[in-house]
Figure 1 (cartoon, rainbow, N blue to C red):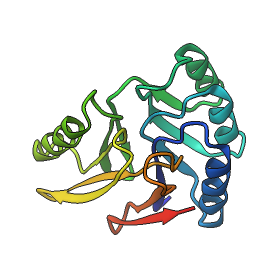
Figure 2: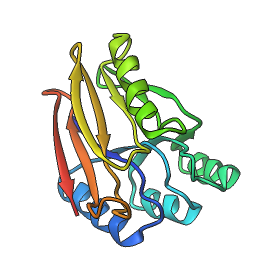
Figure 3: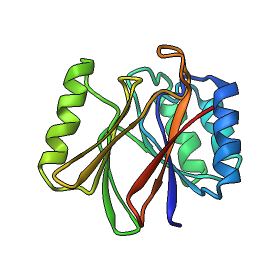
Figure 4: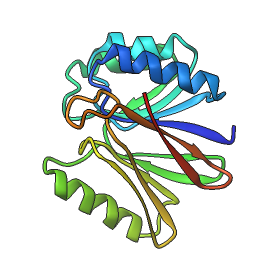
Length: 170
């Protein structure tokens, strides 16, 4: 695999979702980690029908949890309450959306990284790009794909071998 797509806060912005999916396909990405707030099942279907493997968590704005769960299950995707702990190419990854407070979300992601239990912590909810290393643990918020709050529609690609990250704006 080598590289994975990291997405958060797509909020049903189908234009942004389509542009991101096209970029991910161009770069040969097969797996997407979504850190929450897909929102509706039609957006999830749009992602999955392109053949991506998806592992993700629900966000605070995901409303139709039962249908989102069913759509994910039918496509053999993983979509669950936070946190999701997964392993990809030897990297132990924790995926979360966030807590009710934005600054608390960033604080919590930092504390999880400080625990040393994971190689990568991926989170969303704040809608702001955040890429840091704490005790050799990579903390990543790919920003908001929707672009509604910051005006930037971003996602990330993580090279799992080099542990390098690229933020892409669409």
